[in-house]
Image (cartoon, rainbow, N blue to C red):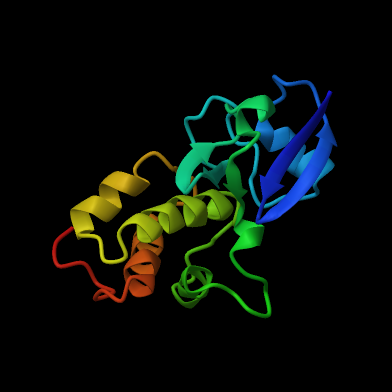
Length: 158
C-alpha cells in the first residue's frame, strides 16, 4: 500500500503495510538510520523520533498512524558539518560512548527543549527517564542538555 509521510520537512511516498512499524520504514525505505532498533517494546528509547513535536517510539508506531503528521528524525536536526546546538552540546560533553542510544536521546531531549527551552533539572530528568543508555553516560547526557538549554552544566543537586 502506498503511504505518504512527511519526514524532516520532506514528503515521501513509501510502499508498506499499514501496520509496519515506522522505524522499519525510516531505516529500510528512507535510509534514515539514526533511530535504532533496541528492544521493539518501547522500553529503551533507541528508536525515539519526534511526531508532531513530541517524542515517540518509532518501533511501536504503525506507519499508517504517522501519515499526515510531521515526523522528525535526528538526521533532520543537523549534519556533521553543521550540527544543531543540541548535537554540538552532546559532542562537547562527549555524551556518546557506543552511540547506539544517542539518536533517541537527542530526539527526546530536543522535544523537551522545543516545548520548554529552559527546563528545570527535575523536568530534564523526568523527561529523559524513559530512554536508557546501557553504557552509563546519563550524567554526560544530562550535562549536554543543560549546556544546550544555556543552564549551568553542573546540576545544582543530583
